[in-house]
Image 1 (cartoon, rainbow, N blue to C red):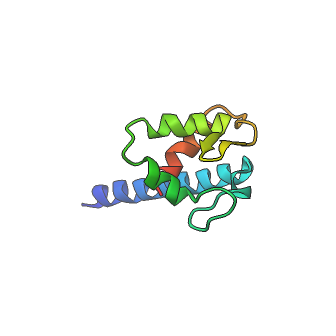
Image 2 (cartoon, rainbow, N blue to C red):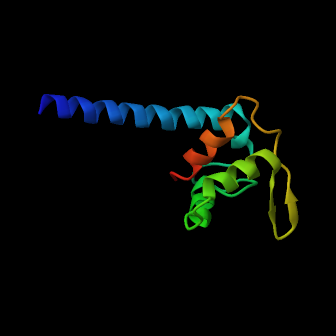
Length: 100
């Protein structure tokens, strides 16, 4: 029973660290200038983005492309800052956004 508790605790720590790391990535890459988890700013909330894409089996891939190149709305192209320079940041951000 003690071993199981240790595994559950370790998983919880890893998951919370991963969420924190992704929030830090969002800040580091300038995402928070236009987006927030729950409050609409210039762009949609991460919660709204996740809800819009939840039925898409390729949602993370779609979000990685949007993070890299910008997206489109009814008005046209949405500018995005340059793609995150660190390898894997865009994928980590997309995966994190889909958890909202």
